[in-house]
Structure formats: structure tokens, C-alpha cells
Image 1 (cartoon, rainbow, N blue to C red):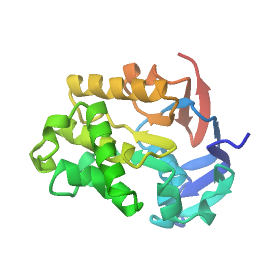
Image 2: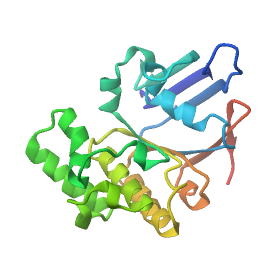
Image 3: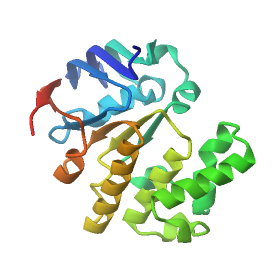
Image 4: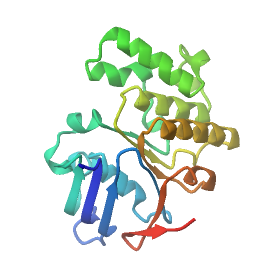
Length: 226
């Protein structure tokens, strides 16, 4: 069976002359699996996710060696438009992802660019806002929301595109305890739906939702126990 993600002997560095951040990373992910990745700050966790979703090397450049495949196809051979139809990423800082004048517009933006039918877009807006429990903020300007609320909208905007693979890059790091609890509930529901997820986080409550735990250390991924 073709796996959503396969990484073989991946090396990466940003500049010529600099040290490699990733030094022979190997990873495979099964459909419907939730994988958690931990590691010290600067260990390359975000870099790995950016490679998996195609930001590297299509947008950010660097020297990359090895193999990274999505559903059997090399990321280097796929266009960003092809990847964004199947892979959704939520970043640590929601302000890097939110730019529309209203929450409704924000969530509609991705599906509109995928040429989704208008009625279906409306259905997705309602569905994702209900999942993140932000229905009452549908017409609000995202700039008026708290950090935790912005993160919930960023999650909803990605979910509205209905990607097959979700990448969450330390999405609880800038939210309060209530926000962390709500995000945990969302991930738990997504897991129940059988979604394929890679979590990068330091919050143990979030990490415990994963089927497997790995640590990125000294440029390589190691299997960790609970």
C-alpha cells in the first residue's frame, strides 16, 4: 500500500558552508496514523515539515539530498498547487496565515482557489467553524481575535480545504491553557475521523494523542517511548 509520507536518508542545510540540519532522516507514515515529533528548539522539526509540504525546496531554498515522497510521488516533482490539494499545514504563529477581512473570507479563501463550488464552500465554512467552536465569530475581523482564537481560525481555514494529510507545527505554543484544551479536543476528533496527522509539539497532553512518538535529535529521527 502506498504511504502518505515516505522519507529516506534526508539531508538538508539552508546555505552552502553551513552545517546540515537534517542528517539522514528516515520516516514513513501510514494512512490514518497520528505521529508526534519532539525535539529541542532549532533541531529541525519545522524544517522537516516544510520539506514534507513542499515549502522547501519550492519556496525556500537550500541544499537537499535524499528522498521525500507523498503518496509515492517525489515532492520535488510536484507543483505547490498539487501539494496544497492534499497537504495542509498550520504554523506556530497564526498571524502568518491570516490575512482576510473576515473569518468567513479566511476560511473560504482556500476552497475558492481550489475552484470548489460555492454551495460546498458554504457547507465547509459551517462545518469547520462548528468543529473549532467559533461559529459566532463568522463575520468578525481576525485581527480583533485573541491569539488562541486566531489559531482556531487558522486550523479551520486549513481543514476547509479537506487535505488528506495535516501538519501541525507547535500550534499550541502561543495559546493559553483553555486554548490548548480546545485544540486537543479538535485533534482528538480529527483522529477519530481517521485523519493522517503529524504533530510537532512540546505539550504532553497533545503528544499523548499520537499513535507513535519520535524525537529529532542530532539531525536524525529516533523512536521514543512514552
